[in-house]
Length: 180
Image (cartoon, helix red, strand yellow):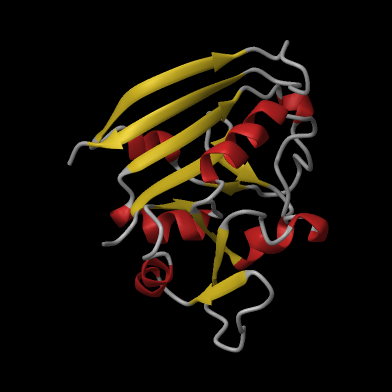
């Protein structure tokens, strides 16, 4: 039986998910990182090559998870703890032994998997412009607001203040389920 496919992402309200290969904000959001780890531990996680290599070397592959990297580069081979896939179908097949597959970015991978995603776990980070990094460079966007406007229903929401230890920004954690 194929896994349930869930998208997991953090972005600004405008859908900014990255800039220069890093998170687009300078500051910490420890509660979101802890939530990501708690939700994905013991599950399959798929991400693109750029996202995978943006993870600090000491933290990859993600521990206690089945790591899948999607890349168009046919010369990449499976390496210590990460499996290589070249398309959605083969990634789903690799994750077949797991009940859930979490799509963890970047933008191209979110778009590739969107047709099979049943649930979106979105952390909307409320970042003041002064905390955005490299504002003179183009960022990477995923049009989350436009996607959720059609065929999705919000089923849960948790407002997180910036007063939590390790959090520099307030955020809104939301769960959306596909209705169509």
